Image (cartoon, rainbow, N blue to C red):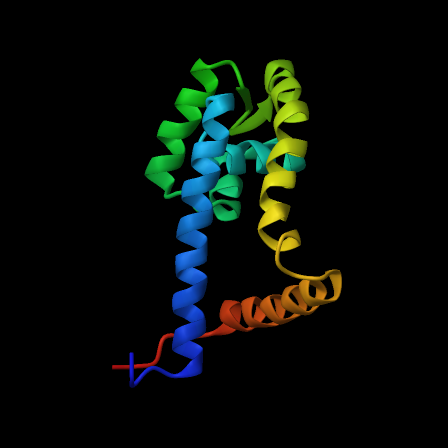
Length: 147
């Protein structure tokens, strides 16, 4: 750790926080029989429906193969419907999923918010959000250095 830069230490903290938060969220969402990845997919479908599988894959942190398996499971559970519109297959939530999300959303958001509300003031949260937004926007333009 002696040779780490402040940037690499921030990255390590972010990675550890993300992993811990995801593990705790997965545990929390078990009461609704969901994983964080499934929750993310349902949120994205709810927000952008109807959308194609490719559009969905661009919005979530699941691989194309993983998204196919997950959609099959969510369809089997009765949470999504896939409709063929001529050449395009779109994904939408069912009434069952809408009802589930009405229940899950406030509880999951409160749980996630508590990670920050418990230790940061409102002003600190705004500052952290602004800084992370700036870093995220920069990362979207970042290129891997040549070998």
